[in-house]
Each structure stands twice: as structure tokens, then as C-alpha cells.
Image (tube, rainbow, N blue to C red):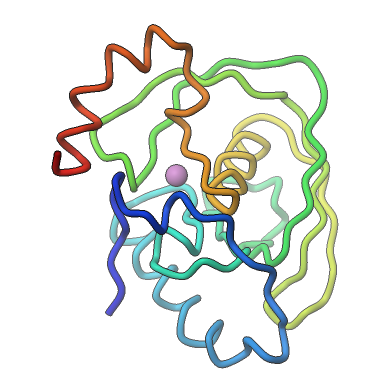
Length: 167
Ligand code: NI
């Protein structure tokens, strides 16, 4: 059984590799149900593969909370194009428990990705779905939402983050 990597884990800071849907089929077959289980147990809105211990370019989003996803739950090798006026809203992360901070991101998103069987789909997102997809995609590049805060907020959070990292 997999568990969620917490802030301080080096795997959260790696750039993840692309998935080969054929060669990685057995890995995805094991990983995706585990990611589903973790996301449901933790009542999160999204989870990226690096958080579940696998540095590959996959994330999942909770479709019941995000109807604009049209049922697309799994995003493999996603390509994002964020645009539009910035919006600011509180975010949290299952890998950074207990910390919730407003993050500024572009409000609109074009996303192209593969589904688990390797079929490409595209979506135009706004609101919470656009934000959640950008947050999860950041994980694939080793970026956490706390990296996107201003210098002062980061400074104020430093001791909390050090505690999470066990230092
Ligand atoms: Ni996160």
C-alpha cells in the first residue's frame, strides 16, 4: 500500500518523467487505484503521482467536485496553457498538511492530456478546476504551492515547514 509523501521528501522536488502508456501499463494499473484510494481517504480534490511515490507525469482530479472536467479524472502527460486574468484563492496540499494559503494563478486553462488508455483529450477550464489542474501539474515539476507564495508569507511559514520536514 502506498502512502502520501510529505513536505521534505526529495521525491516531491524531482521533475517527473513522461509516461509511456504501453510500457507503463502495469505500473499505471497498480498506481491509479492506489491514487484513487488515497485521494478518497484524504478527501482531497487532486493528487499527483509524485505524491504517491512515483515520479511520472500523471495526476488525478476529483470529478464529483469539478463537473467541468466532464468525467475526465486521470491526466497522463498533461500539457497546460494557462492564461487570463490572475485570480487569488486559498490552496492546500495533502503533502503539506495543515497549511492553507492564498495563491495567485491565471484563471483560465487549456489542458491536453492522455487518458489511461492513451487516448488524447482536451478541456477548457476555469475556476476551481483550472486552479486544481495547475496545482497538480506543478507537482510533476517538483513545485509545491508554498513556492508560489510571496517572500514574507514563506518566511512566516518557515518554522511550520521545517517541522513538516522533520528538521
Ligand atoms: Ni498538492
